[in-house]
Image 1 (cartoon, rainbow, N blue to C red):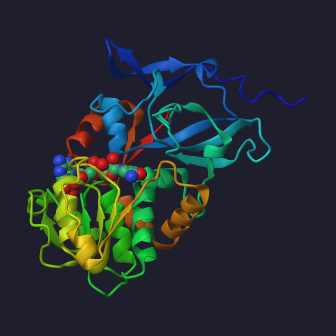
Image 2: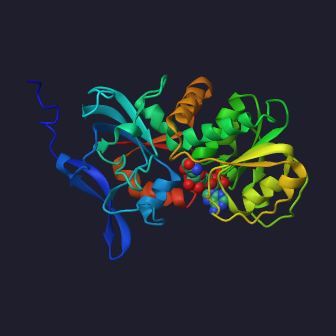
Image 3: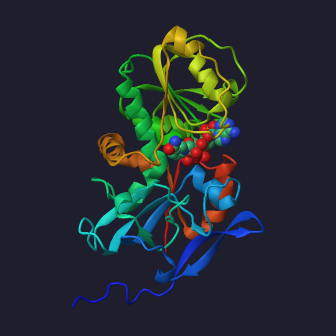
Length: 337
Ligand code: NDP
């Protein structure tokens, strides 16, 4: 008989969101394996990451968890400890991005997590667990955006400028690095001049102030962008659409500036501009695999390191408050211990 691989696991730390007088409140707790959901695969989590959505969940600024209690963290990387299904074996290196983690499924801010087999991805080729979390949901979403623009078929390196909004953030910084590596001339829109050198280092050639895009503008404006990755939404996305060249495309994935879209149909019906929506959470496995292969092929590891900050779990509450205020930059790996 094989020894029980969980017999020495005592209690462990997790960041749990509970109801506090009708409001979600996050706090560190000690859990045991018996507290975890009854899913197919038990994973020992070594790393997670901090995304904007995690910031909303942990700070209580947004209602991300759809049931409580909930372990936060939309990403995780680790090793399989125990599995009820043959596809996953103890020792397998795995990641999860999205799939409802921190919303309907317990997430990555826990030393151990019990995960549905269909939500696991093998640790993508070419990346350590920490690098996979440095990319995390935000970085893999950036790859989905760049792939969507290229798939549109009218955008190619050397044929005009590509704009990235919210450029110093997690999605934005990886998008800048990927697009520059592909040979595009990348223009970064940021609200922070202090981040220009950082963004230039990732490959940005030029800058547009956040404020130049965030006010209501005309339905059609001077054509500038061959394509764009928008993480901001609201007036910013409306202005980006109005400034996109005939036949161009905008991949929209975020709402850092607002969830509304006060735009007109004019760029679409007069300039054939495409607005491509990007969702990472429920993206099917084949799309995920393609995005990770793209990242493996095109994301420079030194640049990935340059845009990444590594922090212990204890820093999560402070980091969550900072990311929702737009004060952090690049990507954040969280060491889970
Ligand atoms: P970050 O907080 O790391 O980045 C967001 C950036 O947006 C900030 O760094 C800042 O960039 C800019 N920003 C912040 N506040 C405002 C504001 N009020 N108006 C305009 N710009 C602002 O977040 P992430 O990169 O993790 O996520 C970015 C967005 O993408 C979020 O809305 C997130 O929910 C969404 N997202 C969506 C996914 C999907 O599947 N569709 C997956 C992942 C993320 P700067 O200082 O350079 O201006």
